[in-house]
Amino acid sequence: MMPNSAALEVAGFTHPGQVRELNEDTWASESLPMGELFLVADGMGGHRTGEVASSMAAESLVQTMRELPDVPPQSLPRALQRSNLAVFQYASKKAESRGMGTTMTAVMVDGNAAIIGHVGDSRAYLVRSGKILQLTRDHSWVAERVRQGLLTEEEARDHKWRNVITNALGSRPQLRLDLFGLDLRENDILMVCSDGLSNLVLEAEMLQIITENPLDSLDVVAQNLVDAANEAGGLDNITCVMARVRRLAPRSKPYPLPQLPKDEGYAPDLTEDPTSTIIYEGAAQPVAQRPWLLPLAVMLYIILFAALLFVLQQAGK
Image (tube, rainbow, N blue to C red; front, side, top):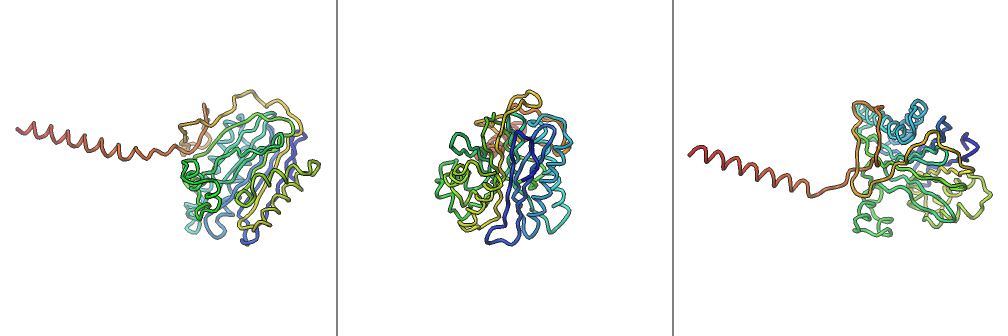
């Protein structure tokens, strides 16, 4: 278990699984002046580069969060963008690392609130009052098809493209993320995990493991969850980080919690200054897909071109 404050108990466990020799997952937990930070990153990109991407992103995020004085809704996305650029620039300079990236789900607990920054298909869950709730949405091909009503949850779980993610940290200079917050209650449990756990262990089974022995330490619970994924096949690296709210405390500073907008998304371009201040009125998330934009642009171009030809013909008469 990593060091943490008396108000929050944090523990994590990771395992390479039963198929892969290398563990490309990284997890971290850090006590900061503004609260407790914990995260899971699941690297990708070929031999060893996934491991580099996830560890580099995690180290950069923790270091930046130590340095930034802002409240979490501002500091967390800024730190994530620094991590994004660190991975992107590293991959740009090394041919063997081209295309590497990582998921990142990071939680900053500040007193009575949790701020969550999310990229990719790792997940954050909340366990409260005997129920489990998935807080994050997967940035993956199958998840998008489920949201569009083209696949069911059951079909997505076994789909051959279930591991194809549509958004990753380090894949491009501009970061796209989901950012949101929630008010916490005493005895809440927050869990962040890689898809090596969520793809093999159903939510009902997760909840049973978490709640069946309430006196177990989180170290034991986290390892039991990872063991369950290994028993189900261990097809991928498996990582789980958990945090239990022992008691609530005031936030370091008063601020509104960011919320995910229901319709439009906002993707900040911080390429030139990754530490510039961001004031979120809503949240940053992948830009909504608009398949009608290209046909509309082509149609407008044709109309304008035809109008120009008409004017030129009239002028030549």
